[in-house]
Length: 351
Image (cartoon, rainbow, N blue to C red):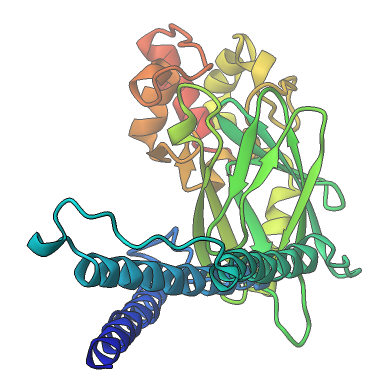
């Protein structure tokens, strides 16, 4: 009896410690500032992300309990039935046909699997089969090697790498529904604080949605290896207030700025192979292989988040993309210093 009481105490101790560690860790991580941990799965800021986070904690608790029980039984068995000198050369007692044991190690795992399956299926159904309200913002996200294209079909906007969406007030929801496409190979769209991972597969459209509950910048990543620059295929989502989102929409719907002071740079841009890959509204540049540059300088980064959008980095990017993103599919244009300066000055006006 004393040994049994000791074993029960041993089981309760690690179990309590494990549950405490799980909850404290999730609380600490969840309280982490987004600026310090911008891809924190334990700091959900939308309904799908919260559902996934709660399911993750539930699974961690269940598997933690299993670990504690198995570990406790293993330690108990090692201590209770350890070899002794008096038992040398003797075969231990054998147990055959124990109905109770066989039922226990069959029924209990089945019940655990059923519970985890039902909990997971419930979350999957709630996320994937959520109805799209009339107030939803529609965005088409297209994965390219190695950048993101975002199209707003109802708003007539095309942008790249940085997606703007409105914050969703629970009393007046404004969720964003995304259609996910791939232009080349498999990609995966993942913004941990806003939604789970969803693959972009060629010729197989997928869908996802998010309803951010606070304003801010949320970072993400292509989560499916898609080539040499997979690690620098970054995502940046700006969740704006309704007023700021409306202002952003109006600015993005404007044609490209026509500045006579950078006419030389515009002519150089339009006379090179740049126009075969990039588009600038109001010019003869109508390429679709690279990002739309109509409002390039309204973005905080270039090269899909690989570098800040500064004149110095922009010049280096045009001059030799491999110095910022080795293996990128953008060629170096081999421009002279004068032409390069002129093109950069022209690009700086595209706001």
